Length: 192
Image 1: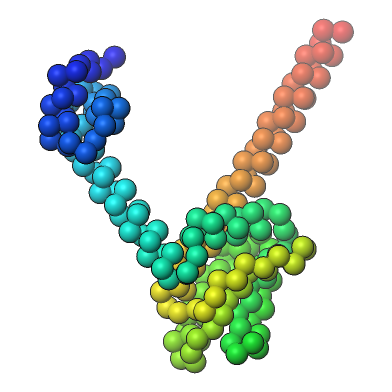
Image 2: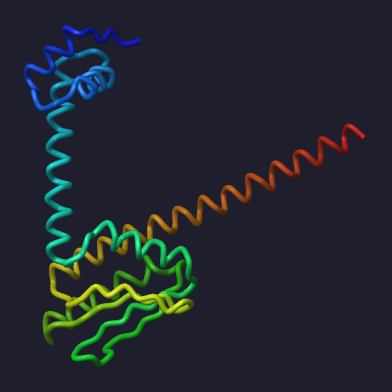
C-alpha cells in the first residue's frame, strides 16, 4: 500500500495547481508515493489532454461535424451491416463505388485511400459518402480535401479496428460459452 498523505498531496498541488485533490491522490498512488513522479505524471496528463482537444478541434474543423458523432455513426453502421459502400462523387457523378465487407474494411481501406488521395491531388474536389447497403443509411462526409482524407483514413482505420475487436470478442465470448456448456455437460454425465 502506498503512503499517500495530505502533506504529499499539498506538495503536488503546489507544483500543479490546476490539478484537483483527487487527481493528485491518483498520481501519488500511481507513482507509489513519489512526489516528483506524481508531478511528472500530472503534467504529462495535461499535455495529453491538450493534444487530444486540439486534434478533436482540428478534425471537427476539417470535417465540419462532430468527429465523435461521425465515428459513432460509422462504427454503428459497420456493426449492423455486412456490406458497406464507400462512394466518391464529383459534380454529382459517382467516380468510385466500392463495397467493403466488415472483414476486409481495414485491408481494402489502404489502397482506396491512396487511390482517392492521388485522384484528389490531380483532379479536384470530391464528395465522399459511406453507405450501409442493407438499410441504405448514408453518412455524408462532404467535400474531400487532403487534410480531410488523412483524417478519414485514420478514423475509418481506427473504427474498423474497433469493430474487428468487437467481432473477435464476440467470437471469444461464444467460444467461452460453448466450452462452459461442454464442461457442464461432461460433469453432469460423470455424476450420472
